[in-house]
Length: 344
Image 1 (cartoon, helix red, strand yellow):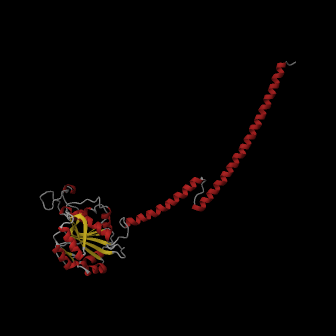
Image 2: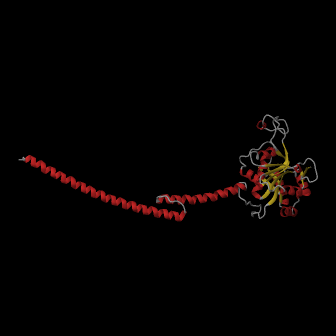
Image 3: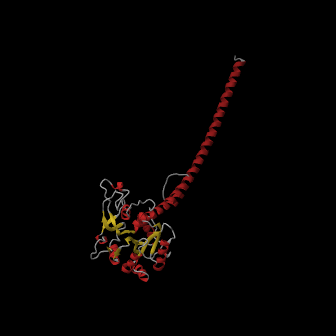
């Protein structure tokens, strides 16, 4: 016969079993519902992903990987930027081919050049040399209507190049202004006219010329040189297929380190133990192509100048892919048949 305590224990055991079965059923129901819910959400997400991929394929024509909306927008934006970058790279490549500047340059009258000139010639002069300038005007440069005709028919611009007096507006400046008002054939640089600054003056001439005229070549000439314009034009035309060309009577002379010497070079120590200049064109007359003139204009602030302007010009092209042309016709020491120049 079971005791009351025994009956109580059996009753409690049955209740516990019932509660356990009930809890298990509830958990199973919740698990089933959760499974159905998760599966449904996954199916909806899968459908959304398929839709997004299809939309992306329509817009970009690429990709079959599952990505989010944010990623889709980022990809579209990146591809748009890539198109813009490609366009910029193409423009940059064209600019490099042209010497890193725009193809169009303004002429003195403010209008765009319709046809590129053959050459711009700068005759480097200074104060007190009006007789030399008048002789050049009569001999080969021409003046007035004839000078305009030279520009129109042969595509050659010729100007005297001079700076300003250290005492701005003094009698020296006024004499040049009066002369220019009669002849209209000067480039007057905003530069102090001194022998020590001649190399910088040449650099500023190229900067001014390339920014004012669009030409194939830019030529520097001294004001004691006679130039055969027809021979010069023919020689330059023969080298128009070379984008980076430096033409002149090439030389490489001794570097003088004695301060008392006429051709003293303060930076003599930079030219090595043998004290010889690198190859460069003689200063009487030389020509550079448009791309090289543009290079000087762009890098004007960092291009070094030396005691002599012809050495300075030659130094600007060291390290560049430049064709040095040693043209005997540019040697002005003697007048030969077909020569371009002669020193007078």
